[in-house]
Amino acid sequence: MCTLLKPERNRTVFSFITMARTFGNKPGFHHLLTGFTISRRPLQTLAYEELRHSADPEPYRATAFVLHGLLGSARNWRSFSRALLSNISNPSGWRLVLVDLRNHGRSAKIEGLNPPHDLVNAAQDLAHLVKSQGWAWPDVVLGHSMGGKVALQFAESCARGHYGGSAKLPKQLWVLDSIPGEVIRENSDGEVEKVLQTLQSLPSSIPSRKWLVDHMIELGFSKSLSEWIGTNLKKQGDHETWAFNLDGVVQMFKSYQEKSYWHLLEQPPKDMEIAVVRAENSDRWDPDVIQRLGSLANREGDGSEGKFSVHVLPKSGHWVHVDNPKGLLEIVAPRISSLRP
Image 1 (tube, helix red, strand yellow):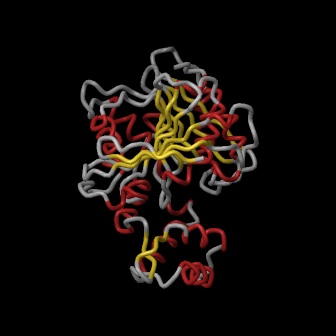
Image 2 (cartoon, helix red, strand yellow; image 1 turned 30 degrees about the horizontal axis):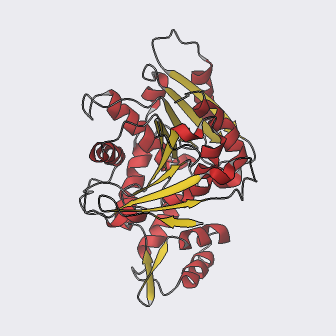
Image 3 (cartoon, rainbow, N blue to C red; image 1 turned 30 degrees about the vertical axis):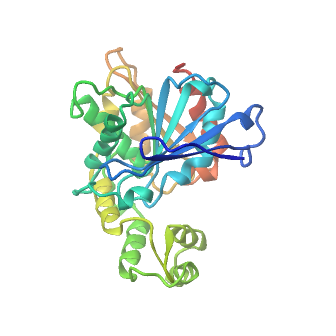
């Protein structure tokens, strides 16, 4: 069921009722209204989608931002976000904003998101979005992989006053299978670097999605990874082109590797909780990093700082929202529900 609403402030809003599929027919899920808001103005702000609950006509009272990872987009997190909204205790009080980070998704073609393409500017984009739309600052920021580090940078910049006196820290920050410190190449299998190098070696115009998938498989990449890379193509005339800005993505990955936020985990800002979710079967984690996270989570605080917690998601690799979405919901939803908007 789809209802096209009247355009407002040069935005087009598509709203429709979603039914539970991947996550089962949870009671009340059919009342979930998913509203997608796509900015059509040439503003220097990110593209985004909004999810709201339809059961209550009252306006939302709290907001959660959802941030995708490298080479991803907001659409990758639609299914999980719908399920999350239906599983928190007061869904009508919440709004979820699924963001396309710079150089990704619909934000890839937005003018004004100037270099350097690093985590600092990616987080600054979120602040610009809040200010340009006249929104309250988000209560929760949830980021996967690179998006997890963008979330950490957002909190750090907010705490240091870089976004102005009106900025407020998130109450919860969720970092999903993202290494909080520098990524040491010797401890990595280098798959991401190989993918980016391969994409840079390809022509800007790809003959077809099938050609790309077959080519990457021939180069030794898995079929599932090759097919996922293929979803980032979009039709342009008689050929395919990338839906992301490849040069910008490469710069963002370099920044992701270099930035460290251990200091933020060691001293979370007061009244904020940072929660790291580590996928049990993820190949991103060095034993020393796991041990360091555990030590931080087990220490006793004196109440002068915020909270830090670590959660292990069983039966999941890096793609937490695909490998074990139910398990991820069981970790995240109760904690967000405790905020009681």
